[in-house]
Length: 205
Length: 205
Image (cartoon, rainbow over all chains, first blue to last red; front, top):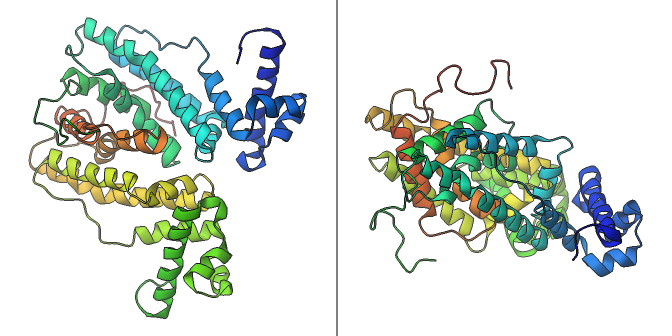
């Protein structure tokens, strides 16, 4: 699917804006290709042909969300970078209207949407890996520190509380999660475990 | 609602077993009071009167799940306790049929179910707090270590990967999350932050 300007790109933007607006205003149950087409002012045949169904529309919303040039902030320290990242995640999970939460909820309704959300998050975490590379270069964490578990440790508590437990953000939650991850990383918690330490066998998947 | 034996307790068990079975086999969309009543062999009027609707049924499934005597294992070390806890969470999130995942997904469909799942998790984390108390007593972590953020740090990466990103468990994920939390806790990462460290203001909610 082509992205940039021109009629194709304009139609795509109109349609995906309509998906997000319908989802936030009326929820997944009211989401339909016809409602999206009407709201977007685009012929329904066009929408069916290009996106097939609600799952295809949602998947494209996630894919478009990843079509940006987003990079994590480079604040000069691991803790600063993780604090900035968590501030952004907190803002997304508590935004009004709750577009991000509506998309997460929709991912439990559609396999296509679930896969697309997984791709989106994978891509975001991949873009965050330089945070850890910079921390290694600065000597803040040991060489061999694994980026992904460090980033998950820093961010997962926010998702756990806001997206799964559906509780309000506690003051300091984002900061404490960032601080914990940075401190743990500095003590070598995210270097590959010594052989024999963890339960899994070499052949485990 | 009374719990133990007798006709009332038996009917409740039959009905809630039917909710879980219907949910796992046919999904939330096919879940209805009538289908549950039929499967349970209970008169539909009884089900409507006691549970009102699908949300009420799901909420009671979560509430019943918390009606057990579950306690976290006491293995003699903080790391051992967290490893045992994560093994149980991993088993629940990957069980076949995927009853736990179906219940989590359903919590995105019903406010009643979401609140009941939140209560269930709150209760589980409260029961896990002695893990941290024992670690303080053994001198493994500093006095003043906060139980909840430590427990969330240890467990959230599993939920993040399996329940939100819907990715398969990586080998060692459960062990690494437990190890990270234990190591971070030993260095004082979960004691209340010094005043002025975190961004939030005293009035923040």
